[in-house]
Length: 101
Picture (tube, one colour):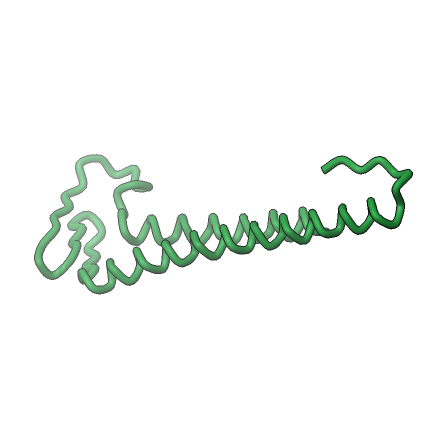
């Protein structure tokens, strides 16, 4: 059950990470060759897609990506701690069982 929850959480995180990456760097997934992108004082303008992203919006998406990264690390640590606690409980109450970590 913990493994399945962890895989679901990682899948969700990867989806959000891919989304923020595509928003911040639209050329990273684009197959269009030679797209014209320029960075200006007001933000990012991708001529091939006609998208304007203000610098403040870009900063917010970068912070969102950082927060998501921190969230996945925190959640993973909690899952691992819960797994260790369960293993220790089983070892305490059933010492004759062999349990791999």
